[in-house]
Length: 477
Image 1 (cartoon, rainbow, N blue to C red):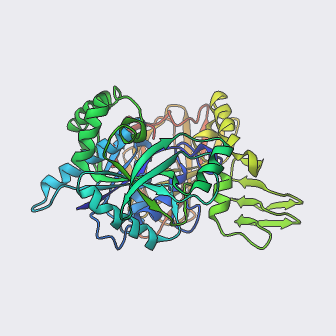
Image 2: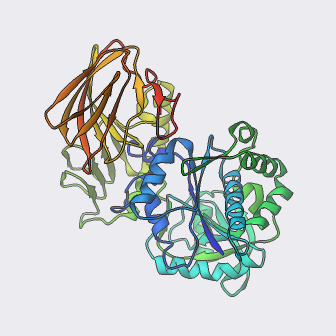
């Protein structure tokens, strides 16, 4: 039984300011209308695979679940990592989840895991499916398959795999090579027997766990114990955080693939990109006659080879060549295309300075909808709340701020102290400091509210959650 495993971790810092710690690139629609996570899940159609196991950061859980729901995909499990420990532990958790689900089914064999990062672009889906089918027999026989990308250019940002002897489309692995210099990368491409290391794999679940126990026993032991201590939380599998915290961090390449004698590689030539930088996204997107890729409200004059992104307002450029300009509601990035690898240095500086822009957008998504902080000043803040039909904010109170709510559109059911009442369009109410309150959307259309906060402090840690249908009591997220 082929069981996809979608790894939806990582922060994608090189794609700042679009990608941020709490809203990373795999959850963004970078190369089409669907997000990268949705594209990854959707391209599995036609393989005859079972429902996927998704591994994601705990902070992204509601976004991941909602994005899959939007495309009518119900995962086999969504496993939450309380902290990132790289790919070897993440895949081990997925293997345990897949095996647990298999035990619950009747007459179902051991799952063969197809491990896919959620942030890859693959243009040629039929070629992708062909490579998967070619790898399946080897995986079923106990080999650990990785997919090697046929290189088009001498990239220095990827590791390489040198192929050995072949049995059909499956090659023995002669060696793994670290990220090379430009000269060595040119030699690799010219040789024709080196592939980019894609980070995609296929193997039987128990076979992977056996090799992990052999070569990285601490990881294997910690992951097994953490999964045995897992608890169900709504649609999520929440592993034991205290146990998982002791797990060493390592990639599957270092922990297993470079050590096992059972590793093989299947070539993949399917228009692949890991969209690891703005330059890579430019290459993966459709450009106009001047080599410019544009998104949103953009006007360019005498500019060539640029990536130009407008998120909320007009972006105008004149005389630029090979540059990246990205505008969001709260940040603007301008950089030469050949310097975009250094964007991560900006993110590090934002973290050092304690600024929120490294982790959050101005618009913040919650399981009930989203809020956008549209204005703030001394002793006031203005937000726009968008509440999904049937959704509800937590029953909560604040110690340091009062709130005024004005319904722009839709119908709101308001709890204010012991009162419960409806507000229609153009109606408003006031919530004094210290009074418990809640907003619900009982209607079938989105509810839009303008919230004016007044007081001495507006931080999200001034939220005392008394009840919450999403299991967030006692948290501020």
